Length: 397
Ligand code: APR
Ligand code: ZN
Ligand code: ZN
Image (spheres, rainbow, N blue to C red):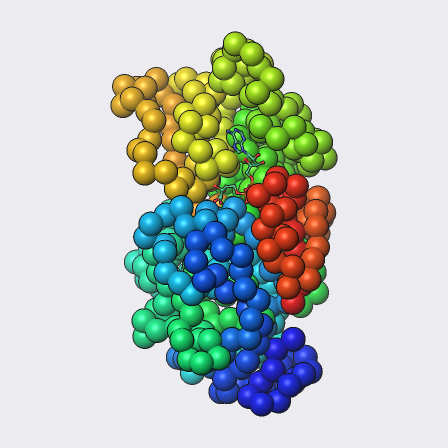
């Protein structure tokens, strides 16, 4: 638990009552000091929120594969340190910057790395969930308002932000456009999943692909993102949901969620994955989803769809400098390919509705949290994801 000013052991009631508003907070955060180095859980300082910003107390956070990619330093442009990673979480509003009208202290909230200001040229369109100012931007590492950091070390060295959110901290500051208010009865632990991975997968099936009843689907990479696609396809009544993963333990996890068939590419011998899928589906699936972040897998996913109408949705983040492995002439076979950011959900508008669907039991989230650990074991949680042991390891702060 963090402390406010010199006052150690502040109680949650004080946080909720907003007693710390306007003050610098001292709290624990997991700081990345260099690529691939174990995160250092240490005391940091968190500034009060500026105009149109909100400071929140994070109660739960989890690790997504995107955190792994940037932590390893796989993308040159993202190498700024020290930095606080993390973008999946749920928490409570602690204090409000000037001008914030849509939140109150104590509100239950979920951060969104792909913000929604509500009135820019993008936000007013129905056909995109990007926002002019607050869209996902892996190259951004400071606050939008003034280009500065709200985090620092105890001796005043700035600590950089990540994906509009930086959730590996007991307290974080976000633009109010990057925060969604959810119903106070919604279980916050499970709501953490809606902050990235599960929303991304569900939305890719519902909004980007618009999977319809009876459709056939292949999902490449059965992490939380891929399995959320499976859940989305199951809800829509897909007739076949083929999961593809090199980790054989994902067959069991996948079948619990709704995968009807499982392929381990390493077990196939001479036949390729796309040939196998074409054989199983009479020419290819209607929709394929790439959720592994691997370009060769993306090519397999593309070729696995039916010619004439097949659609491939790219969800994986591809750190490789290689370009798309497709010949332009292949597009004339009528297969299409498109990427999906945050499942094409407009976060602020649509996440409260999704939270309600989860509360009603229309969407099942039970299988996604496979592990729970205290926040100071964050490096163990990273290892669980690296080893393919967990879908999501929930860290409680
Ligand atoms: N073929 C099939 N599956 C693969 C392959 C491959 N060549 N390589 C990896 N996988 C599988 C892994 O075994 C794992 O089950 O892909 C899955 C990826 O899951 P996670 O590591 O849990 O990642 P997740 O958080 O679900 O994110 C998936 O979406 O948001 C992006 O950056 C994220 O690229 C990542 C992807
Ligand atoms: Zn993510
Ligand atoms: Zn906008």
